[in-house]
Image 1 (cartoon, rainbow, N blue to C red):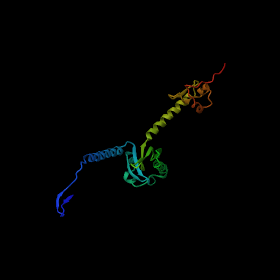
Image 2 (cartoon, helix red, strand yellow):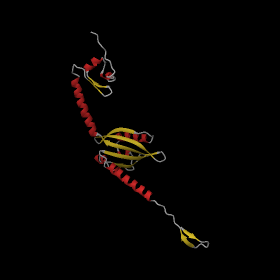
Image 3 (cartoon, helix red, strand yellow):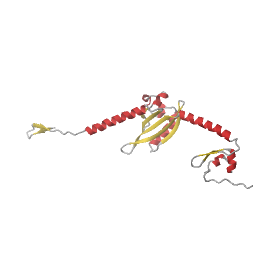
Image 4 (cartoon, rainbow, N blue to C red):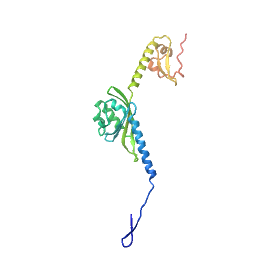
Length: 212
């Protein structure tokens, strides 16, 4: 700024300089971190991320799972879940979105376009400790569900054979809780049903002793 004498004539200028190197470095680091985050999200395998405001309008969406079901971020930005997805999907998703702004987290599964997705969400707290945005991470677990179904089918066939054995057979976890039991073992334990038997701790249970 100019310095003036008593007659109003400028005789010098004064300036203040501040070292903003650290500020610039921090800003650059923040930009680089954000770029890395965007790259990771964009290439998230079998997944997608949905960021939305309190009006439930999407402000950022990204992820490889979007293209797999024919969606693009441009198709969703500024719209709500009810404007993008069919009622059977949006009804469940919207209800869980609301929970995030009440300070809760959410987890739910949805089937869409022939795939099954596991969804986890939370609210994003700002510097005033207010939740202004919510985020939901979605992952395609279709293959996992198929694997679980094949495993369950194998177990069902196995226990179908085991139930024909005259010997008692049971399957327990590491804490001693019975998970599965065949008919012969029910008789040995004196238990009325398989469901009742699953309440038994095999490490502390004493089966009834029959005289004779």
